[in-house]
Image (cartoon, rainbow, N blue to C red; front, top):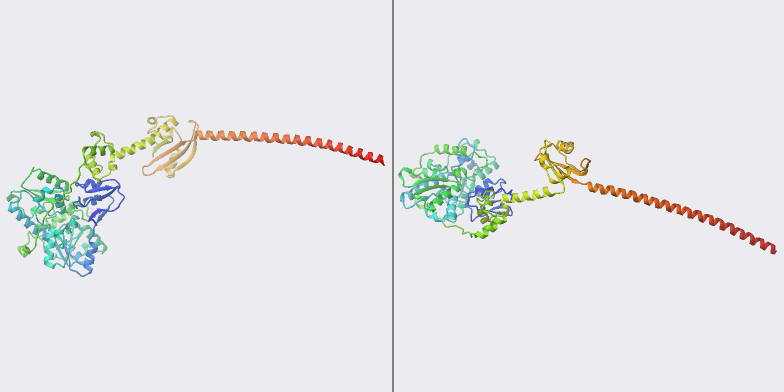
Length: 574
């Protein structure tokens, strides 16, 4: 499982994560953001800015709880930024809280920072380096290794304060102790599993994770009795997380040949690395912090502590309360601990698209000429060509071009609006016409520019519109005859609450009504004709019946007479 990534969420195509990531280590596939681990430098800022809060950060919290339950000696190394991350009346209340949670030992990572500072000074004093780049920030180290490998030779070959302190803790409390680093940096999670540091830091918790744990246990820091740290720290070590704090802790700028430059924010780090790479500057000592405002702006800081300057001031006040430096007694037996570190070229060679391929991709998003390339940055990339290269690499999708998609949608919307056979009218809350399509112009015999911003009552009764506005109930499928226009309209009026406007959609049913009337007339004529035929048939039947009656009567008379004659003749015979 990767350490940092986005959880599945309903991405809204805002691309804030891409905009905040200068190295563009985020892939957009099927409209879902995904961090590409090989390109990522672990700063975690993309997760902080995500409006969907789609954060998926590997948590060691359960492992820490399990270690405590198993009665292991669990040792905490807490970064000095804690003073600005939590609401406390006394900074030492954090020690009490961690003891309540089950930590056996609580020390400040600042102790490791003091060790690192002494090693930095050693390398600077040697004068062997053309330039020197501090290596306390893991994301800064990844930035050099992955994107500026030619500068690896300038990285101070020293572990970070977290690793230095972890080594010291293992040396002090035994290799079987369970060491937990607690700080504001998500990059430390990645650093802790580096093969060079195996077994040094067993788990990493961010301040955000610690905050949630304290809430779960209903622990309120300000209610606790303060306790001293098990290992004391110095003012110099505690100042590391502040901007410029690393160099201030050991470097006398007046006595060094190096120009001291403090840089924070990935974009600024990249700019100064480019300057060094191009030999524009030399004999510089660069303090690198990829987070804005140094560690105080770390991605693992609690979300509740949103006031950066308030946090920074609290840390400064805490630093002032510390001793100037640790005594040499604190560093005995350090020669037996290895604090050096090697850095490696982790650059990924990307295949570059040809000019023809870039042009082909640009044309697919409606960019045929240089003036079509807005370079608006809406997709998260700085230029349209940079975005086209990302499409070529499979890191981006064509539909990420917001101006193109908007233009496409507007064209489609306009085609529908302009060509629909239905009348479309948009009316605001004041009953003034805001939109009036061509079909409406033809039916009501008035131009859109003449009716726009005029009351709807100019062309029709506004009462139904007002009723819909007041009741917020749509008026659907009612026939209304407008004799003045010679039309019958099937009328629907919809209230769009969010936009606070009324949308009228009307279908001209005049021809259908005429067909219906014609059909009624035909039916009536058909019924009349049928009635006449029936009546005629009745008359004929009556006439036939009458004739049949007469002939029957005559036949009866004749037969009677014949019978009488026959009888008479028989009588004479007798």
